[in-house]
Length: 541
Image: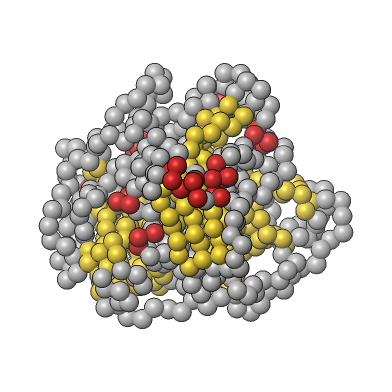
């Protein structure tokens, strides 16, 4: 369908009017004229109140139906009186929110206002395969596509959406394309006294003229980390609460490659939910590692002391960086300042004994081996590990044709590489990111499976760096873990996940069931690694 035809009969065209979202409010008067990318890391605290995510308007008059449009396109966001950030955004909004309930029908039309093809991938949502937004369902510039499905029971949780075109995802994510999808449960088990906030964490790297800086060789090797770290499109906002307030902080790591090692000054965090919704019982944590693509649902009771300030921040994390480390990797990165007011103390909130129910999956009908490697030209060690690059190919459900571990360096859009000093495009480095010895190919199927069968995947990170592993079309349970030199350890409790981190040479046993037929991707969720080949397809029938 052409865009002009769509607008001819639909009131959704009204959504083409863009808004600046919250970024202009958060960053106004913070950039000096001609600020360089390196100076972004030294920005002063934003000092603005935390803003809620801007909402995508529901244009449906029907109960239990969300109908709207998403229009990815170029937008300029004011950073100062003389500098604008030139981003690509959905409906002109930074990190917009779609909110629905279990049982609701979602009817969203994508209108592609970009000059390149794109898709809408609904990350973490149990959609039919035709509505997953996979790269083979790309929408050309000026074209539209309808995504329509119903949220089944058990789908409540914080999910998100982002583009997933073939060899174009990294450049689009670097421009800011991402949004949150909140699915409310039919009955909420948490007390009303809990104060809820959604936090979408993203990052940017800009040139002095406000354009998004192209990728560097280090970006392709490690995953891009922009120096400007944002929460809901704001730089270091603050949240004012009464002493003793119980906060529910629901986070999305929407960064391409940045890991978030989260701590809150002088407070214990309590994990109550993961990618797939609530877990059964609260889990106390001193800190939480949130990798790209993951979500976390946290409770924290703020100090009873009035007029105090506590910093939620990401602390340094060693994930196997290749090349020269940028300074910010060794620094504490502030996200959100929580400030207590001069007010009465709120009482503690009692939680129900059981938050949710995570039924363990039964014994697997199929077992698979999945190996993640990175390979440098002229080296045969797959990142220094000792695994078999063809592990899993003898699986009874695996495909047997067309695999190759050759170089996978095509054209990766206008942002494909840049030298820091010259700021000129350069090719990605000569390194292959592989699954079972293969780089991703659009027409290749690695595994074949059956709807309704329990599968157990042993995923092996046979490399020297961390990789967050993501599966489309379903959620999985982490059953057991094995570190590089250790023994298998059973998981102490279960959760529904769609993204999980693997440290170097770590193995995980994951169990899952695909409920919908189709071709489903699984890949590293460091966007640049995915784009350079660390992605594969399972065909479920």
